[in-house]
Amino acid sequence: MIIIADGGSTKVEWRAISETGSVKGITTPGINPVFLSEDEIFASFGEKLSVLPADEVSEVWYYGAGLVSDETKATLCGALKRVFPAAECHAESDLMAAARSLCGREPGIACILGTGANSCLYDGTSIVANIRAGGFILGDEASGAYFGRRLLSDYIKGLLPAPVRSEMDSRFGLDYPTIVKKVYSEPMPSRYLASFAPFIREFKHHPHITQMLRTGFDEFLRRNVAQYDTRKYAVSFTGSIAFYFKEELQKSLAAAGMREGRIVRAPMDGLIAYHREGRV
Image (cartoon, rainbow, N blue to C red):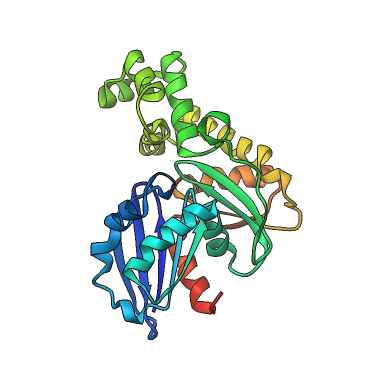
């Protein structure tokens, strides 16, 4: 049995794949391994994963944000080994999850557009180039946080068209002090900014919002993806922003002369296919 985990700050999606090919899904609370001890990580998933037959698990592949240092990977694997002591544990970044899910064992350009944004050039085995994302202050163009920031910036400056502003007023009851507090003083401002993505989706056909979306996607492609060899490789995407604003993203890709690859909501199905094809 192989276990694959797609770990985020909100939730972790687990899939247990048996020798017969059957798949069992489990969801546990999200974690950020960078800030948690082995005991805290174990406490987040140990009980729920105990329903799986530990003696049958040969490999665990955990993909998640923040898994860049050997120390963090070792801490995570230590917690996993307490549940599955006989299994080989592998911890990889969310960007590797995107690359393997979108490209399999073929080379290509893989991008994440969700709450945050990232991109890489993948040679079919390893990530060989990565333009730094920069986070929601210095970069993360076309992410949920980026579009939320653009929306709120237009709101506080009085640049939103009346129908959009009126709906924001009635739905969110926003005021300038609250927005400033949420963004500059409270924890996880990027998540707060990205929480406006469903609202943006509702109004995506309004010309002002359509232009905002196109500008964001154009910037992401120009400032990030264009630094890879887009003449040679297709550009693929995973993440809610890429998926739910697919039409606008496709127009930006075409305008930039880039070849569209796959655009999917989440990486799990692609990861299952990748690991089913053969042992890494």
